[in-house]
Length: 272
Image (tube, rainbow, N blue to C red; front, side, top):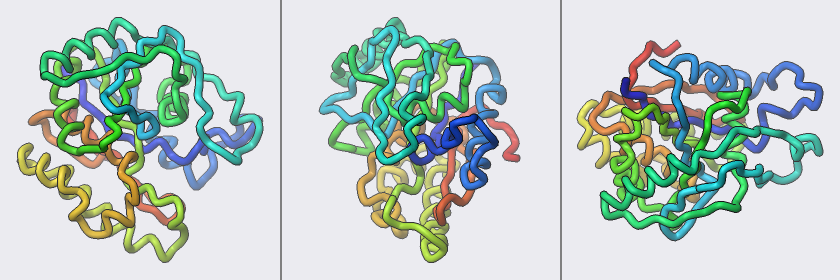
């Protein structure tokens, strides 16, 4: 069974866990949280492991995290004290890490190793929603610090064989990420950007899809949506790993005046 690849929104900081008593989700974030909570159950089979690329880890070359039990890196600021005690104790996946390094090397992509860094909130915040029992091993792979879209699509293509090995490839970022832009005046601009991005990502021609997404910064309002593109680059990895499979909009919703979307490559299921 070939698993799909995903580009998911990971929200803002610890947004899904702001109530220290574990009360109902914040209505602002609830649709996104509901989407994330249903992802694993909606897969054609349960993954044996997850390979995740977060918008919060950049290195000169892609780095493979070989830690067996990574700690958490609370890389957000100004949130309630209890959010710095969140736990997500899934095992790492060092064996998968060695397989990833070998696939990258076979594609002539040099990589590095990491063992000490904690999982950032682009990992544990969405995964705490997606896999709350923390039973699925996870491997984190860094972005390249040069943020080259074509290079990240190439990384995804090199990793595509993992989809037939029970590994779910996830890009974790945000389709809109301008933290200074808030409120109703932003919404029409964010919607126009989102529509253009979605049209590029879901182009039925895989080659045209890649070309259009590589040229993301030519789309309407691109640099308004992403003053810096680190939260968009995980999409490139998911797209590359998706290969020639159909692409679809998997979720869209409005948060803080932003239109935010998620995408799936392969494994088509009806959009609720």
